[in-house]
Length: 99
Image (cartoon, helix red, strand yellow):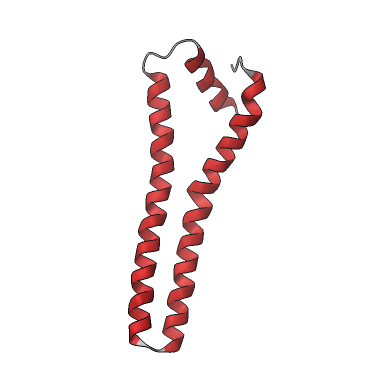
């Protein structure tokens, strides 16, 4: 049970931002790369296709990295609070779970 009710709105906001970063940004990067590749294919220029393919691969790697960085931050936060956490850090984690 969260004992610090005054910080719940802040934690909800942070969790919403984490979800946006974790899901929408990678999807947006992949969509932008696909659009670039589609434009290059329609232009029928081999050089542009190669550049767009390279750009798509870089964006896909960035999307995967962003997804896992947010996941890693969540994991580290769970590990830090669960490793003998007492007092404020334990109640903070309860607030995180409740939000």
